[in-house]
Length: 354
Ligand code: MRU
Image (cartoon, rainbow, N blue to C red; front, side):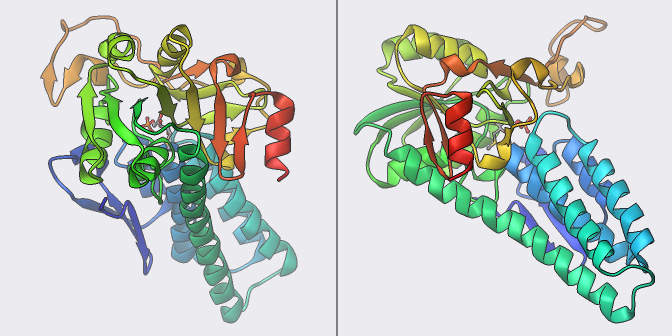
């Protein structure tokens, strides 16, 4: 079993500190939206759907803490809190989806109750916002299960599969997206072996994914990123499955840096390349991959590993945290609503309207 990632209770959000995994299972506690945003920015929690769920809880914490007492006050708090949460990281659209959804719920309440709120109305507001945050989370959990079922049906028996970064339970409130597909297939006896790329520089594959796969009893091996082409060529890999941080309207997909390279290798070797992501990851307002904002993270995450310098002091560094895989390299998108293939603008729209 994977430990709970977020525990929301009595005005406190306990966050599993993923920076310490796999060595230590420890939680940090935050009591407001600023604390939630900081934990997100600092990678105590990460993974697109989980960032969204944390934002929903962070919003609920802020409403509980500030107890806005009028519709104008609520509007101000709702807009400010959503903006604060959305500033934490730029690429994963689930964060924007959840923050906006919570803000809109609060704004609708303000519109229904103009003027000063009674004590009962404040209580009602807090309960409403808590409920919405829990709904964001339970929808994510259900979406993971549905993606697992749709995704495993695409895989052959005796499947040898590769994944990148961490798109597992640790990145969601459920069984995960890409790793959820692998574990669902494993439960049906279909996985011969899973390969997890270590995912430089932040090592989500080495620290998190392989740990999850081992705990789930999936036969799995860890490889460094530069082994991927060789392993695909020589070890019978017959599918790649990854998650996503943002899928543009045309299907171009931003995911952890290194994903694009893996898609190119998969195409060269004529094996399917699947992206599993819940529908809040699809951003119809972003027309294509060029419009996706790619987060640039610190040089230190590249030049240091666990506090030890691995490159010369003063070296110039690039650290784009994500890359964009063109839709044409993606065999299918797996959402909780079904499988989208071929990946086209029209098929994405149809899936969303299911
Ligand atoms: O920087 P991270 O660890 O938040 O990046 C995570 C990824 O890129 C995942 O592959 C993606 O969020 C899919 S999570 C189900």
